[in-house]
Length: 496
Ligand code: SAH
Image 1 (tube, rainbow, N blue to C red):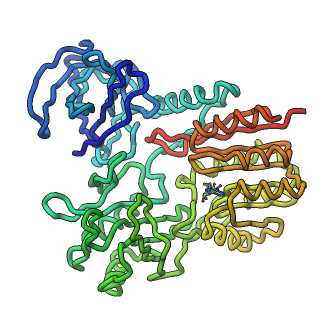
Image 2: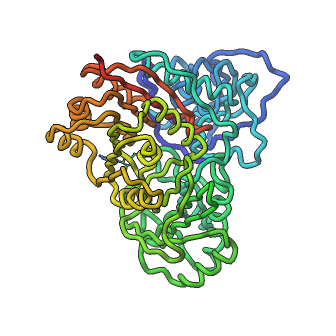
Image 3: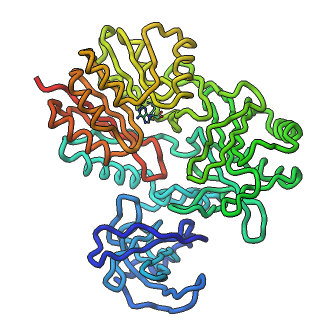
C-alpha cells in the first residue's frame, strides 16, 4: 500500500489537502446494514495504522469529483475517497500526516446501484482504473457529465459513443520494474504523482497477452541475474518493459527499457523469451539514462525482428515504431475517426491539413476522400512511419512534414495558403496561440478538433469562437473505459 500527496480539493472551504491510497482494497459490502445513514460521525476508533494516527469514520458520499473520487465531509472538511460512490455510506480510514489527509475505503455499508462487480480476480490490482467500481451506465453518465459541463459554452454534446466490451482494450502496456522491501523483483505501475511502484500482474484494461509476457520477463530475470534499475542508487539494468500489440495483425513488439546499453546474456535472454512466446514478432532495447518520468530514451537497438509492428485500422495498414504515438484503443479509434471524418463532410477535392498527425492515421484515412492532405508532426520517428505508411497504402495525395504544428501553420499562413478542412489532434496540453492564430488566417471552412483533454480543448475552442468560428457539433467518444479519461471531437464551422 502506498500513500502520496494529492492536490487539495478545490471546493474545500478550509483548503484542506488530502491524499488517498492508490490500491485501497474494497471489502464486500455488509447487506444487513443497507439503509443505515450517518454523516461525518465522530471517529469510531483511534489507532496507530501504517505508522501514523488514523481513525475509522462512518461517512456518506455526497458527490463525485471530476477524477471520479467520492466526496465526503469529515469533521467539517471535504475529503475525497477513491472507489466510493454518491449515496453510499461507508467506513473510511482517515489518517493525518502534517497538513495532509489520507483516506482509504474500508467497507461499503450500503452499495449504490451504480456499483460494478467485475468478476475478475485481478480487479483490485488494476491501477489507473479510477472508475472501475462504476457500472457501464454510471461510467457513461459520469463522462457525459464531464463533457457536458466543459462544453456548456459551445452547445449540447451528442451522447457519448461507448465501447461494447470495455475490457482488455489497450494495445500498449508499460510496466516498471523494481524491488520490494524483501528485495524481490516486482513489476507494476507508479502510484499517482509518485515513483513508488504498485505491483500489478494483470489489469482489466490491458491486453492479456502483453501482461503475460511481462510476467514471463519478470520470472526470467532471476535466472538471468538481471537486476531491476534503482532510481535512487542508479544501480541495476531493467527499468520498464513496453509492449505493443497489433490487435488486428497479432504482431507483438517488446521493448526492454534499460539504464545502460550493456546487456549481459542478451542472446540467451532473447532466445528464451521467444521460446516461451513465439508470438513475439520484434524485440528492441531502448536505453534510458534520464532522471525524468519519460519511459523511453532516445537510443534504441533492434534485437530481434524488424523493429516495428504493423496493424490495420479503418481498412489501412500502419507501421508503428516504439516511440511513435498510436491510439491505444483501436476498436474505439475506428469509431472516433469515422465520426470525425463524417463531421468534416469531405467532397473528394478539398485540401486537408492533418495537424499533430502521429503516424498519419487520420490523414491517410481521410485522404481517400480528399484532393490533397498535408500532415504535420513533431516526433521524427512518427513522421518516418507516416511517410512509410503513405507508401504502403499507395496514397499519392498525402505529404507529411516534421516540425512544430504551430510554426508550420504560421509559415503556411505567411505564404498566403489556404486549406478547406483542418483536423487537429494535439497532445493533452492542447494547441498554442501560434497554431490557432494561423489557423484563423488559413480560413478553413471546417475544423475538426479531436482532444483527449476537454479542459484545454475548451480553452482553444473559446479562442476560435472569438475569432470567426462557431461550434456546430460535439461528439464525445469513450476511448478509455474504466478510467476518468475521455476523448472529445468538436466541429467548428467558419461564420459566414
Ligand atoms: N492524430 C494522431 C496523433 C495524436 S497524438 C493519432 O490519432 O494517432 C498527438 C500527436 O501530437 C503526437 O504524435 C505528438 O508527437 C504530436 N505533437 C506534440 N506536440 C506537437 C507539436 N508542437 N507539433 C506537432 N506535433 C506535436
